[in-house]
Length: 418
Image 1 (cartoon, rainbow, N blue to C red):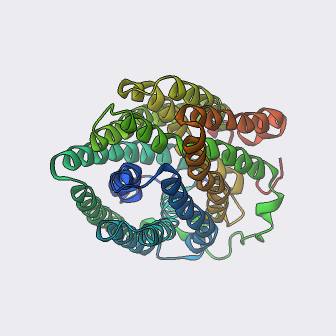
Image 2 (tube, one colour):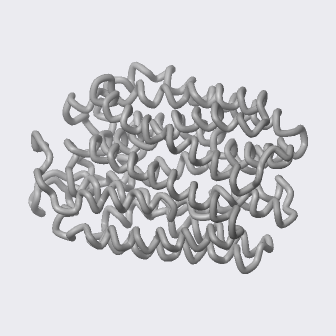
């Protein structure tokens, strides 16, 4: 049986939230500034999009195995430390040489090193608070993460404007050090490795992990992954392309404008993450995720109509609604669907892999359309792609809604037992 309430007074919960705060800049690193950084080095939108896609494909291929590694590992804190170090080192390669080969190598290394971070943070959280406390705690983690993105992006924009892009690299390194300190402050004994992978009981005599076939028989999980693939195919390229479009129109300083795009979205995400926690408990995960799919077509339309510096407010506010709600609801739903299988983090990695396919193809598609037909056409196309997400989510609503019931409903049967 799943315990009725999460364990009380778990040491390390504040350190966990601190880890999520500092990890925001480690995971982002130079990424949001990559487009304008390379544009300043003479790169075209097509080349920028293709090199981002290379990194996206590498990350997509790594997330599944990374999730399996997190499930099997009894040293999840060490995985966070190692991934943080290599993510920053990979980003630093860009500073030494902006050649295509070096940038591609950096993107691949960054993606592979960072692939374990998402499943590891989810696994650590689940291992500390168990399934019954996961939605609320993971929501708090995401509030901290988005707040960290606001601070990191603001500092990056100011330091990039004042001292050049070198300061952005150094800031990412500083946040990595603070993230490593935070994860080491989480007592190892606070993380129950069986609960961290979705198994019940505190000893080896409890439930055993099911086969990996559960990933292919859980229909709600497959539909969720497919819908997210469409969403990220349309969403991933929107921010870097919008930054390039505004800078190309001489509407703003590259570093400051890029920082502003991030700050606006992340501020909205702080609020929407808190809203997602409440809405999941009262209405269920299905409605929360539906709102994210509705936001993207509107975002693409506004981006196409308003290529001005002030356009960042509505465009990125809608990104904050979509990504902010998803950052809480998607991992929470995957943990719910995979509970009892022993493969929660493999499930997280599998969903990230499929949505990563869409995200990996998005920059290449968006960059190519922008280069051939202009930025406005690219934004309209990217926004229209999200209609695929809505078609899946609404079309299978009768199957999905019982699986996405409110957090208070208790455990939902895993492995397709809906």
